[in-house]
Amino acid sequence: MTERPEGPLRRGWTTGACATAATRAAYAALLTGRFPDPVTIVLPRGERPSFALAKEELGSDYARAAIVKDAGDDPDVTHGALVQVTLRRGAPGSGVVFRAGEGVGTVTLPGLPLPPGEPAINPAPRAMMRAVVAELAEAHGEPGDVEIEIAVPGGARLATRTWNPRLGIQGGLSILGTTGVVVPFSCSAWIHSIHRGVDVARAAGLTHIAGCTGPTSEAAVQAHHTLPDIAMIDMGDFVGGLLKYLRRHPVPRLTIGGGFGKISKLAAGHLDLHSGRSQVDAAHLAEALRDLGAADSLVDAARDANSAAQTLALAREAGLPLADRVAALARETALGVLAGEMQVEVLVVDRAGAIVGCADG
Image (cartoon, rainbow, N blue to C red; front, side):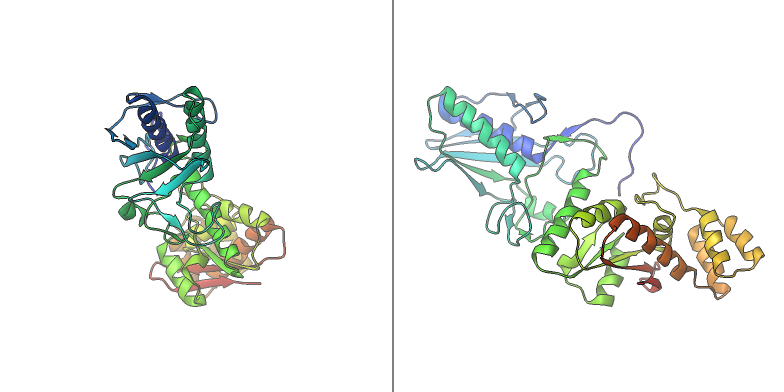
């Protein structure tokens, strides 16, 4: 995860907001022959941002406008991408129809807010674009029957750095955004993806999913249980985001996988495992060793250890199953959040990808 820079952070705009602004500019040009530049839209919470056009093209039966996405100070994979809308009049009575252009994906699996076969343009951006079309259509005495094709050139390449392939969104990016605003380092997009990953797994009828902190633990857990890709939830540091969503949308079995340091934070009750928001508790690990019957000298050494890895090494030298104990404590934390009948397993994975600790009840 990219580290948050110091000082005040600049907000940005979602791909959905950019697509809405491009839609407004393109439809205005189709109706009047002129592109508004800059173009202003109203977001769901009342903000009125203006966007400069990066591209405008007017043909005999279409208008095309594009905007360069500015994600502010957020490390957004689509920052700087061109969000392009091509707008055409549709058949009478067709309403607003959405199409996926270059770099915009198509939904192929159930469980997402859109059915398979639909362009990956989320409901909130669709609603914003429909509202823009309705407003302009009323002002110009038009029926508002239009086809909106959204493209993000290079989006297929960018999508490989997102959850889209695992969620069954093929061919490109999703057009996202609930409020239209990107709040830097809010991590809302990541948590949203965790939720959608659970939805897709449930819709596929899976009875066992796994949430892992990183690629090493994910590979180890997936191989250990022979789980399909859609069962693997890249929860990163947001174990709380996964557990709280599963409390409302349960599956029969959950495996949590991660390195010893991350899992020790969960064992101590932390639900956000990022180094900037929680720290390894050396005293907690020392008490875990005491519970295992460690000598006082080892407990004292653990309290003074420089890292969780050092504490684990001391425990291994003494032949004490500290990783199992930490996994068990982490499992208790997870069960306390879930408050249901889910089966929960916790696996501790070392840096080489070996499973060194386990608790499954």
